[in-house]
Length: 125
Image 1 (cartoon, rainbow, N blue to C red):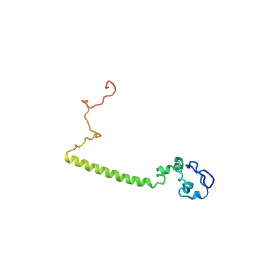
Image 2: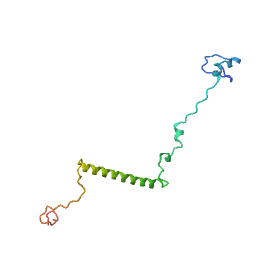
Image 3: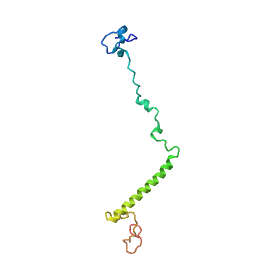
Image 4: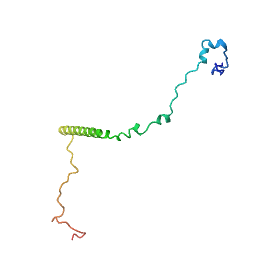
């Protein structure tokens, strides 16, 4: 079957329609072309306009975001510390936990020497 341009219609198994036969129901649909689907963009085309700003790497450049983040960070840390202290005090009051020893505390210890004098050198002279 040929279309109005003289090209054979695909999937027609060689049948040809002439004149008024082209207007028969079902035949007309064979000659109509389906609209082409919109072309899909390739990955390279999609990624072409993406730069560091898209990923948020230049958010600090304007100087607006950092002070806001610092303020929020201080607030969140203070809330977390307060919550931890409250929970710790509650556990200590219930006896679930014991007070931890401060491993960084400095304790003055008496020296092992009897007279308290420091010895110098290998012989202690």
